Length: 205
Image 1 (cartoon, rainbow, N blue to C red):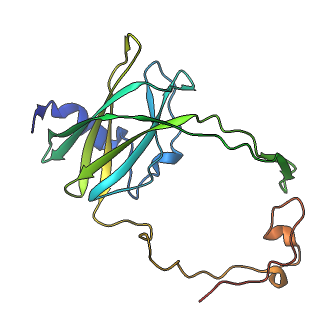
Image 2 (cartoon, rainbow, N blue to C red; image 1 turned 30 degrees about the vertical axis):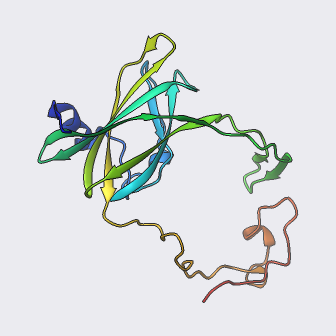
């Protein structure tokens, strides 16, 4: 099923106002802009040709929107024209927080870093999305909760031919890490409250 869409909006997105996934900007690192509408927080680091797990959160007025009804429309943007390629409901998947032991370590600049606090993320919206080709695609999110309908969220994503990360089952990338005898101070390689002098394996091959 294909449906023509006003191409102007997605053209603007591709020109530089879109969330880009696939080598240019890691979507999970984006800082959302302040505003009245919903802000998508994409946690998927890259998209490739074929089926993908597309996970995201929705931010509203500085707070994560939980348990909303979300419909995703996927548009194939080819030659400047956007055509509807798929439409599906996106379920909200709750995340069970695991309480960890609270620990604190101090950085060289004197600031303290706290570990073990419970995450504020209660869940994510997760869809299985398939892309037939590499290149630019448009995503539209239709969101409602209770009797409220939010403004549609539109973004563009870039799909790769091949993943930039090692595929599942492949050998680990070769590395050469510093070990205890390479440094004068263990805190150069170990930020634990009590650095471990047993850091001896190099793991290089």
